[in-house]
Length: 492
Image 1 (cartoon, rainbow, N blue to C red):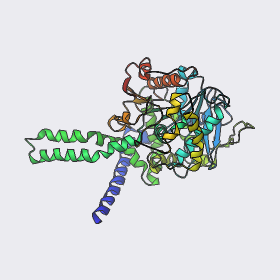
Image 2: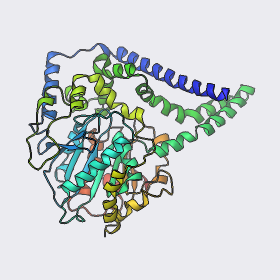
Image 3: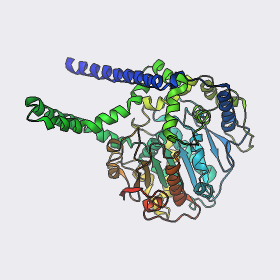
Image 4: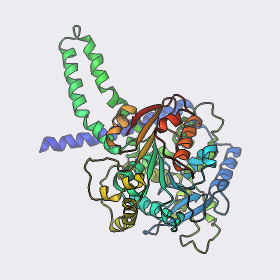
């Protein structure tokens, strides 16, 4: 009993100690590179204000062809989104879910790709709760999944014509946290979409399985090391074998150092968000665009990440008499606008509050929302729609974490946050029929941002969701036409 208690205490102390060490490591890195002491010029501040006004002023179009919209959830909190459509049509619907530290504006480069411009589909780019122009939640647990379920259902009801409901398909595209959430929805609310298109974030069940093997890895490494310790000269090679056995696990823990930071007390997290003139967020965008990119405009990136400022919160959207969902930002958005530290704290809440891994017991409201779409899926002539039927996702889970909707995964292999051995290898065991994984060997984490990888992603979206889209036997072959080195990892 006592030993178990002390082991638990040791785990907690080790967790927070590792977090503090990473906190100091990041601050030291910012100081070493000189980013910590760099200040914005008056020109920089002006560009930041202009970008914020462009993206978040509700009386203006954030991007050509798009308008601001709000949806008020049952809990009276608002989700902000932009869309290229005002109302229902017979075209496909695509809902985009961004990640950290982004917002709906992360997709602005992807929107301009020729394949996307000719898509002829309804595109909805939503700010996740606590990001951009969407209200903050008190906690970012499975409440987020409830909110997204309600939102996607509402978007289907708003944008897909009731006269021909079976003519349009729904797609969910997710990156980073949007990808994590997409995996969860594909497991537990698969009827929300006919297909999920996801990039560069782990499926939590896969990661749990990978880390469940840590004891096996540790035991193996320990036995090999004991051989070296018993006779160092004779078993010198055992030392390298011991290290190599643990390398994938140790490397992933090192890459996840920032997650330990985000679980520290508020002072540490909030300070990391603004320290050294926002060095952490600026560093993320340097990684996103890569060296030498002429598209990385720092102030524009910061405006996209931190959402509307106090001035933008005073604006209002051109009112639509039929829109019951409000036309101004919610009060919690203004709170974040006044305090970048508070904004960063909310962004990182997803890492603390368990939306990625906590069991999701659906509310009665969520079940009621999903049921009609399950019924429609089960009676549909569309094979993919039948596969996403709720009948197999709400009441039964034959394989824990199995995806119950067709899912296409596009993965930048040079991801600095999610290593392939822990976060990707073995994903095929969880995929359902008509699913596929394509690897982009020269690309990193930000597949929707970097030029080469976003061209591949735009190609995928257009082939799946375009107005005249036809079944694609193997999407990797199509991706190879624009990204010749793309590799097929698994096809089911």
